Image (tube, rainbow, N blue to C red; front, side, top):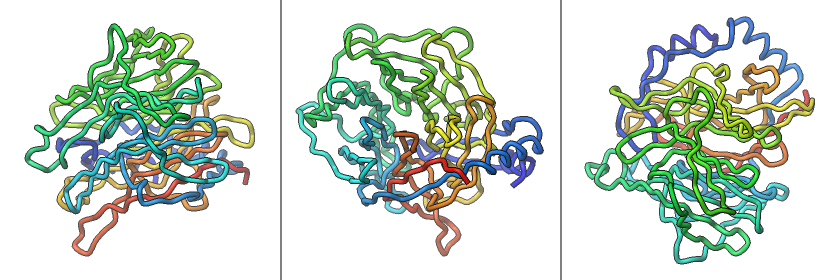
Length: 401
């Protein structure tokens, strides 16, 4: 699809976010392509000549069928925690209260035992990060619990957490932390990344649909939160942006997400990098067309030694509504690569078993990106659609042609 056709598609389409709310998600008409259509095609062709995105399904369990979950990497394993299975057909929500581990070298998948009297309950869209100190821990903050979005009691049922929990991986034990001093307000749809002994949390949305662009840092060694004030320009408020940590450079990348205004939730078409050392954001070319959300990101090194930020899947605007729910979005199987050195985006060619997928989550281990959960809409005989849930873990790597 050409850039011009895609831009027209965006401008004529409306989408609604899965998240929690019934408000209309107005798709952005910003486009966001880098340079001309010819230049974008040339950059894409150059990358395609040397690299292909290879995707394989490596493990499967129906218990992985969920959205709003956390996927984090720790010591060559990937962990899945919490989330929600929001079923459009039955119009019910199920909140799994579990933790799963995928050993990436063997593809062994298992549910972990959980101990402790202070465990987080059923929460979706928490922000979770992993720390490798003291045998390894998962830190989970925030999240929400609620009835199905079309239930009349939805808003009264909505509970948004301000709790910070630690899961000791070796002991399989949860504990509720009570940091002294200032702390973030209750929120969901925030992001979290762990770097050099500190958890960095960005953005999120409150129970009253207030989105923010706050940046907080939690240091387990001190047991305290601190709100950071970055130098210069800061990304506009949002929730559920795609996020990726470039650990070798000490930088965090944020793509898109949702804003909230008078017309409801709107897609955000922008791309930012936060430099941890300088405490500063910088806006980068957004590049991906058409704009999308509900995707996942990771930083992966290609065989040529170059590092790329990969954006995987996500949903695109469409005019087809799902059964009983105004979900006007189309899952995509596209994989986009941002060349960190050249600061350009390219659409990658993929092989293997890349699915159409949205509302999934992923993490990077040893230059491979692992993602699970989420779903894609599938047509049914009456020209509406149903959810096709994903029970698999996928492994994505960049390979030479």
